[in-house]
Amino acid sequence: MKFRRLRLTGFKSFVEPATLEIEEGLTGVVGPNGCGKSNLLEAMRWTMGESSPKSLRGGGMEDVIFAGTGRRASRDIAEVVLVLDNADRRAPAPFNDSAEIEVSRRIERGLGSLYRINGRDVRQKDVQLLFADAATGAHSPALVSQGRVGAIVNARPQDRRQLLEEAAGISGLHVRRREAEQRLSAAETNLARLSDLLSGLE
Ligand code: ATP
Image 1: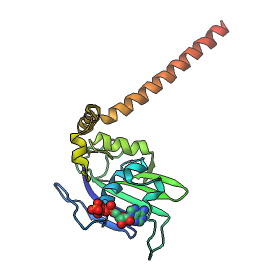
Image 2 (image 1 turned 120 degrees about the vertical axis):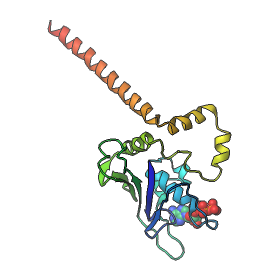
Image 3 (image 1 turned 135 degrees about the vertical axis):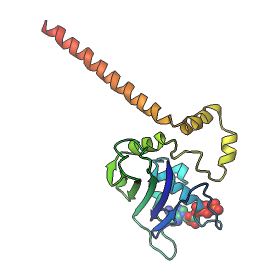
Image 4 (image 1 turned 90 degrees about the horizontal axis):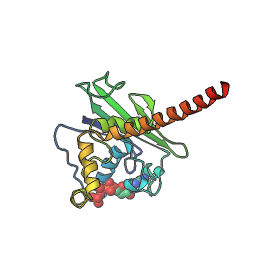
């Protein structure tokens, strides 16, 4: 799955709406210290369902909203839209009927955050599964931030296995397996209850 475009509004230092076209091939972001390079990667991770404030270099989830500067007032809303190429229609149903997929996440102070795929409200899990099935995600090694290369070299074997599973596009299967096991166990509980009720009737 290819990223086509990133649109940010009110996210960290990107107070004004900004759009980045992501071209074919490897993309590098260069610029002076503090200009917002890492914020761009964090915007992508956040939209892909990153839920740990620490990995977004913040103390709380609302720290991603523009906090204001000496000259500009803070904002109450941050929104990031990530546009994905789906020309080959390989995205999982029901999102595979358009040539581009728009995944957005919006956070409002005091109200939490909302995810949308192609304008439809979805759960965080749906967004995470969409990216996991496409062999990418908030922790994908394809997003190389500062210190990441060293961290991969020094990673524990279990963590390295996770990277390989993600690259192979099978990490979504673990989530689905857990869900299926939970449904199975709920069905077994219902069956046991039913058989108790039936034996009470006999
Ligand atoms: P370096 O090359 O030094 O790593 P960088 O280009 O990666 O820098 P970032 O770390 O992405 O820069 O951006 C840091 C800037 O973002 C800082 O100026 C910081 O004040 C600003 N910033 C971070 N969070 C917010 C926020 N919530 N509101 C406003 N500005 C923010």
